[in-house]
Length: 139
Image (cartoon, rainbow, N blue to C red; front, top):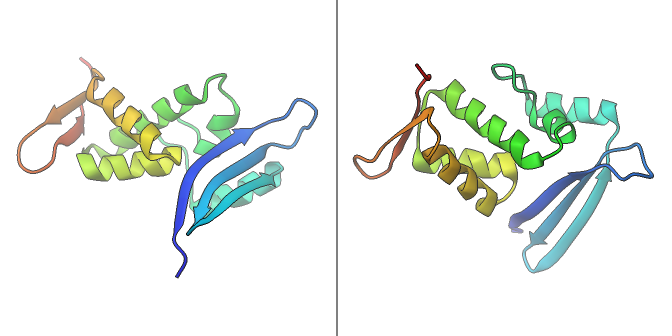
């Protein structure tokens, strides 16, 4: 059986092209993978429908949000906060798993987790086996 390890993905719009590109780099077993997909607006819509992506408290889906802001880290940060706000409370491992899925990278997921830990709207309880991350509305 082949195991898939997704190392990185990026959403790129080349200056000479109007079609957004999705690049997937990683490996399948020992075989390296470097795949570039050209997706038009209809393809992004179909992909979003398949993934059942919807707006969360005014934050746009990942595919659309990644294309609009000047800094992709800002879009991921907004989505990470929206994810915890919608969930209300998540354990550290569950939140990290969802953040890794959001970013496509374990390292980027960990960076968002650390950033959430220091966010004013997030309360972290360190009791038991794993920390609990809770969304707290500012006063």
